[in-house]
Length: 339
Length: 160
Image (cartoon, rainbow over all chains, first blue to last red; front, side):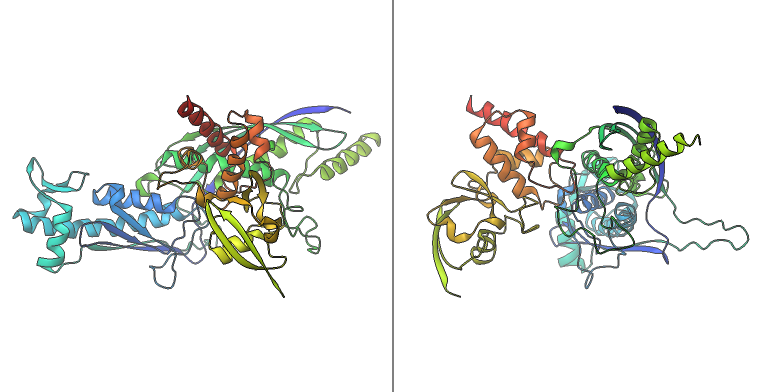
């Protein structure tokens, strides 16, 4: 009986978005009379930072500072259509819709400024700080604030744009089964180091080292935040959390946090996160969806590390001490019979 | 059912309420007084999101009867900012990206404040122990631990 050390590796591909009857999201962008820009969405920000990212994408596309953009989300009665915040699709789907809407709004904004400056809209550019100027002649300029006032009060124009992004449903080819369920995949690899007590079946995760390839990190600090939290969640899925410990019998399902186990701050593994950026061809400014993907590779990596440590394959989650001990017992019996 | 009069101080201001006998401090704070900074997570003392400070002690407001708080001084996260200036812990939580969905944040900040009030220079293990009764779904705890340590450092700098 001993504490045994093991190391496991796992790598995953993870799709961004889904393939259930197509995966659309729409967005609307309009300017206020003072040249702030409003993004209307139905996509929900549940803490992952959707509003911040959509503000960045809209600001980058129109050419204004991020703080000039207001994002209104999450009323599906009144907002533009969105399938929802899940399947790691928010940044990719809504971001593409926002880019299209913001481009259309930018074009109207430049047309209004062109009229005010008596130049061609094609000769205009934004300076990124709230002004529109003639390319090569920055002294000939107008603020976006004044441009919006002129649009609203003189020209009677709406500086606005419509955006939509749809990944059509992919059907498998009858002959081969080939299909394209997703246009874009994030990738990850995790190395997990564990200790397994072969007397009690208890697993201690010593460290997880993760590499995530997520397209372009539109907000690096928020990406890091999500990846660190996700990596911890992956450990939790591997070893602790389940709603149905005796599936398919559900009467013993957990009803509260006494029964639904999650690791606390005293159970943290040493965690390393490395981000690789390979911009996606169809991603908004190259972004993919890192959300769900980041909580997945730890699970097979830990299962592999447990196998490396004590020689048993556990294929049911979570990998509880009970499951490890039962597998060790079965393994010992098999060895005793001489296999 | 007969109601019970209760008076206490909430974030420095006097409150007087008639509460149902057996009502929790959490429900009185949220539903009668309108301070929704303590969150109702599990209502059975296992998640920590309802944590408040009563007479200097960290308490789970979902397990505290309001009528036992007669004459007490209660602090919630809603009372931390002064004149629009965030408390060092609130600032540290923002700077360290220690909050995502935000549901656990007020309880975490209360647990951290109770720690720093009695121990201004805690070790990492002491921070872990102080927030051990609080569950976070999003962050993996590491940024929260960092935020509390960073707030402690900034406090000692400003005190020096």
